[in-house]
Every structure is written in structure tokens, then in C-alpha cells.
Length: 85
Image (cartoon, rainbow, N blue to C red):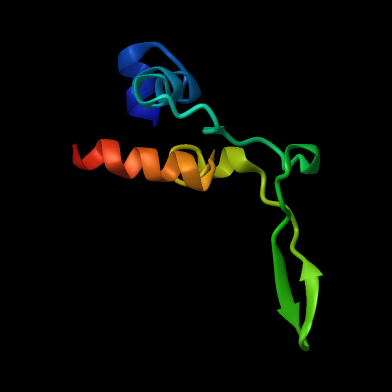
């Protein structure tokens, strides 16, 4: 992600939107920030003594370029199809 930003002079998010999302019409994929339940995003949970407990939220800037994308199953299918085309 950092190399891509230095070469293109665009942010990682701008590169993802321009180079992948726009070309494949993946309108529900974006770089994540904090979880927003108003956008139907879900918090992560873990089980402790057989009881679900909400996990502490990870700041998504930590995983820049390695896991900070948010998408839908539809967009994921579009991406996989485009990848193998």
C-alpha cells in the first residue's frame, strides 16, 4: 500500500476505488474506518465461557493494505469473477 501511494501520488483508498472498484462497478466496497452499525456493519464477537462478548474494535489504519477493506458478498463475487477474467 505504501509503495503504491508513493508511485501513484494517490492514497491507498483512492487507488482501490480508481483501479478496482470503479472498473468492476463494486459500489459497496471501501476502505474501512470505524464500524458504523447504521450502515449494517457488525461488531466482532468472541465466546468466553460459552457466552458471546463484543470484541474490542481494532483501528483499521493498523491494517492498511492488509485487511482494511469492507465489502459485501455481491462485490466479493464481482471481484473474484473479474480476477479470473
